[in-house]
Amino acid sequence: MKGNGGWLTQAGKSDPPELGGKVVLFDFWDYTCINCIRTFPHLNYLYKKYRNQGLVIVGIHSPEFSFAAVPSRVEHAIKQYSLSFPVVMDNDQILWNRFHNHYWPADYLYDKKGHLLYHSFGEGGYDRLEQKIREALALDAVYRTSGASPDFPAGLTPELYAGYERGRLGNPSGYHPGTWASYLRRNLREGALNLSGRWKAFDDHLTSGSPVKHRSPSLTVIYRGTGVNAVIKPPSYASKEVPAQVQISEDGKPVPTKYAGTDVKKIPEKRSIVHVRRARMYSLVSGEPYGIHRIDLFFLTKGTEVYTLTFNP
Image (cartoon, rainbow, N blue to C red; front, top):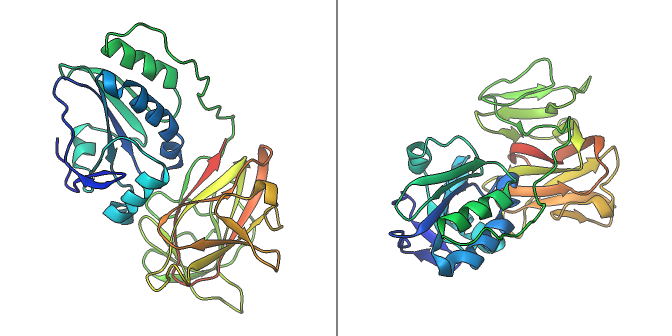
């Protein structure tokens, strides 16, 4: 099994694992995908518990966005989430196409003879997966009851893509692909990206422009959920020392400390700021009561790119 980007572990580049005569679980993921990230503790648990009994987990990092094909960024994610299993870089989605896969995350379980036993898409079903692994390893049917299947309430806002290929704008003027356009935010549409200021639209992202009349370009979403995550990429001239900045407000105010995502910083002016140092998913709001909320993102640094927003159940 070969990936065109090579193999990685927490220790860096590696050789491919030996799969012959093993029970193998192939897991498709992308480091910007919140649904994938939430499965990592369960995959680590399974690998540590059954690796000495014949299980191999192969993470297939099949990037959704071109910037996610950079090995150093995937290496950082492997370390950040303490992934204990080997990962193959599927930069051009060769393996993605070979498996006829369409989802992140997706799991394919094969027995020792290479026969497909089980496959699943999305989050949840962890007990069922463990049961199938135990069957493949000829172990008894005693397995952990995690009760960890996620509860997705009715009405949860689905993932919103920013680019014109899959995106949804609330602004009546719509997208203006490949050119700078100025937007006025009037009537806000729920479950859509509502833009204000100057933006440039690409197939898979939006790029923020310069301030207009001292107002930074902004993006507003009326959503249903308990939190918000966004995939954001800094402009090339930003650095770790001088990162791009995005200011956040939730329901018209700075994000309350108890609901602030892990990437939100409070500064003396009591503003909620995210420092965007690398292209990845950023946690903006987390743990608020489920319901209808409004989030505003003010892009203080020209050239900052936004790809998707996802909402927690």
